[in-house]
Length: 129
Image 1 (spheres, rainbow, N blue to C red):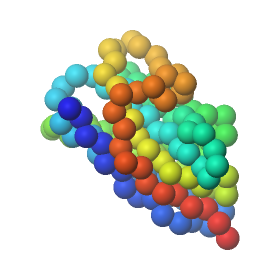
Image 2: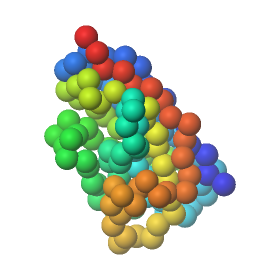
Image 3: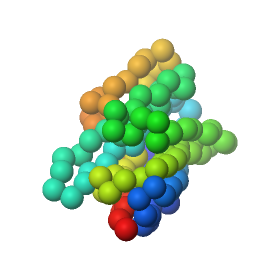
């Protein structure tokens, strides 16, 4: 069973930056699609970004041009990052990473991300002045 652990959350001022990390362990060698979702205060969870096995990326319109998702594979650990620049108060929320086994050549959507099987515990991001 795969385990996901997020880190890197915290507080930032509007216009600032944060980098979230998600360590995926126990995954063996199946191909995984990985993504980030967030849940703001009083809001439903929404997909933010997802990356497939071929490096294809999908972003929510609200974060395009500001957030970048990336992945690095080393030995038995997969790391997924979310670089968040030019943060705004509406970016506040709990950010969670999620994973799902998916074959190469499969493209996933942000809606499908929300149905992924495995999730981390989440990390809080607060943007305020």
